[in-house]
Image (cartoon, rainbow, N blue to C red; front, side):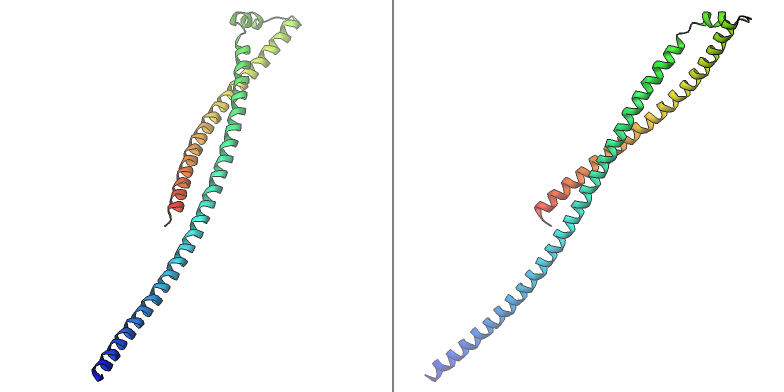
Length: 169
C-alpha cells in the first residue's frame, strides 16, 4: 500500500510537471498568436495604404493622360487648319505674283502688291506656327507614350499588390 501510495504520488508529480509544461507552451503559443495577429494587422494596414496610394496614382496618371490627349487633339485640329491655310496661300501661281509685282503706277496694282506682301507675311507666320505646332505635337506624343507606360506600370503594380493582398503576407 505504501508502494502504491508512492507510485500515485510519483504519477501525480509527473502529471503536475506535464500540466505546467503544457500551460507554459500554451502561454507561449498564445503570445506567438498575438504577435502574429499584430504583424498581420499592421501588414494589412500597410497594404491598404499602399493600394490606396497606387489607386490615387493611377487616377492622377489617367487624368494627365486624358488632359494630354485633349491637348493633342486640339493641336491636330490647329495643325490641320494651318496646313490648309498654307496650301491656299501656296496656290497663288508664281506667274500671277510676278505679273502683279512688276512696277506699276496703277493704284489697284499697288493695292494688290500690298495685299500680296501681306499674304506672304501671313504665309511665313503660318509656316512658323505650323512648325511650332509640329514640335508641340511631337512633344505631346512623347508625353502620351511616357504617361501610357507609367499608367501600365502602375496598373501592373496594383495588380501585384492585389494578388499579394489576397494571398496574404
